[in-house]
Image (cartoon, rainbow, N blue to C red; front, top):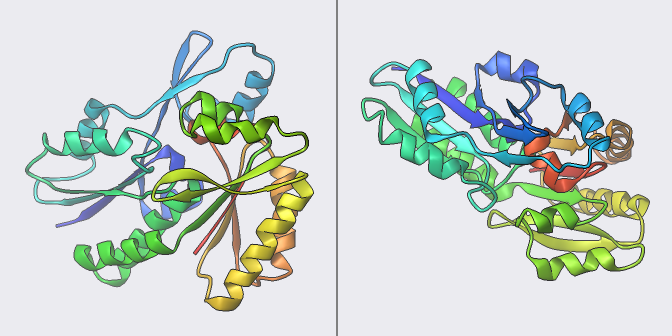
Length: 278
């Protein structure tokens, strides 16, 4: 009896790790300028953001359908296998609900759906922990779930965004918090609490925001061992590298950098950065 790990494309796990751990990634749908395509399959992320910059139309996204999950569950496993699905926070997307509904149609598999209560590498790190746990514990799914839950509780996720317009428009952030986007020179820092976006702080410029993220990270690293650190960016590779260098002055471990796809990037906005660690 095997265990198959499934996630969605908002996890932003680098391709080499997806292949190494044989992770099944189900992509989000992107609807833009009369086209419907799957995230990361028709356009590279950089190509998509370049196209978006020159367009007056704002794209929309949708989660994988129930039917798509049924096909994936059936194709990637055999009767009696375990399917461990870990997906973007249910407060940010309907992906978890789609997967849970799909599980009702493959009752000959043991389907376990986990709400990561997170996004981007906050989700990705939980998926990678699941892969490592299954390998170490020789397919002990119950132990794997326990270890995922530990990581989920520890995950710290912070977004530094240029403005809140897209998040408010998409309903991912309450309008009441959106008013700070009108304050002159203010850059909001967001975090995730119980799966939902919340205001963490506000700074006068992006440089101050980066310094705040690094300072808070350094304090956290002095209190506890940090197991994983990652940076996700929305069409901002240079700034992501600058943040990595700042973190490297206070942390000697590996710092993963991932480019956020449209399913997350459209809401955060071009230039957005995320720092994720546990």
